[in-house]
Length: 241
Image (cartoon, rainbow, N blue to C red; front, top):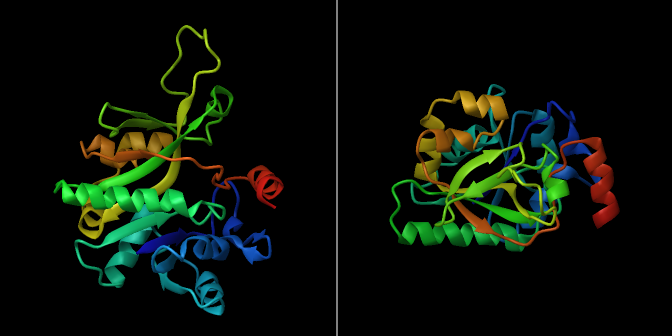
């Protein structure tokens, strides 16, 4: 199941998920973009979004207004929907209206691989290569991985730091905010207490890292990007319009 967390009160771009994207509200276009892969449910704190989803024949679940992260929101939804512990849950952000289905499928496939390995905790995400210039932007989160493609750390800072600055052609791993879990692992993640480093970076995935939980990372090719600001929206419409 694909669950899209949809909160209206974004700190950087309020009500952005209702912005028109080529004739559809952003959250609806995101849902339609991925509904060919699996059942899609919108998890929201807004009755307005519930009614909007209903008008487009998309299932939606009303969740608490108190959640601090999208993952906490989809966790509540997964419990309301009575999913089985072994079911795959994919978190696709509402501000990714142009996300490629191949990217989401890559995360689904990785979760299936991890299940075959019988990992105790199953969580997957993805990254794409980005330029040194793009890596300077704190809105583009970077990830450093170990030799097994598990995440070591995520940051808004430019990591790894290029001490010698001798090669501006160096590429970085730009994190895409798509997460996959089994429902059991999603529940376990949300039982963990938020950590100081998560609050400092404002990156929820650091909760897993801080608690020694592995996040498997898949390399993907993608031109899509999250829409965090009005400038991002204008740029997205130029690129994909």
